[in-house]
Image 1 (tube, rainbow, N blue to C red):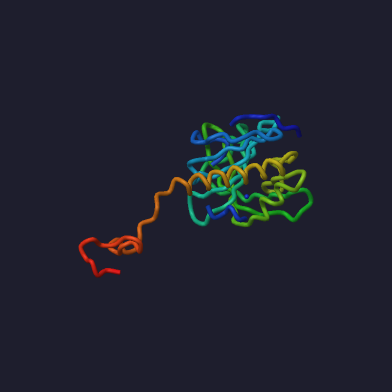
Image 2 (image 1 turned 135 degrees about the vertical axis):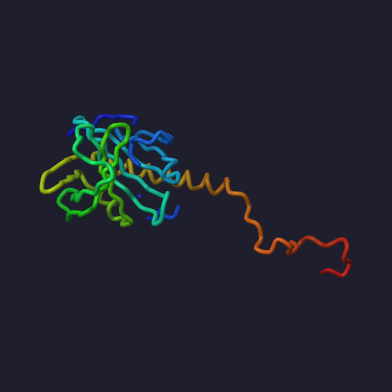
Length: 196
């Protein structure tokens, strides 16, 4: 299945969906958009839209503990999904073993999404290295997607996250000493001539 462009992973795990208005665009690589989502703890993600209307998004979620990687799949035709409900979903990259997950249904601006989270960075590694992804629910395929360009997109997502993390660290005010009354070692007290 061909993708169409739309504007709509572990060392970086220390620091929802192509749908938050609080997103800041980073770059477009091979039909994948790379953005940063302020609502998920200033976390970067990749997203693309396929011809049949399926939206795919993979990114970090730093807004809660444990920090995680998530995958979101959405489609305006998935009207039967009930937001807030959990759905058993099986995800498979190429012919690798199946990932069994519990997906939460969410509604964003009238489009239903299934969102899964994991702390296992192998999930993102498979996503970036494989050619295709299948998602099934109750034995029925709900998405069969080609992952062309995903390696470069995830690589760029990691660059985006490093840049965001570096910028956030640079903005942090200097930390106050644990004892605010302790004099700095290079400052002498003018009122006490015997202080070393």
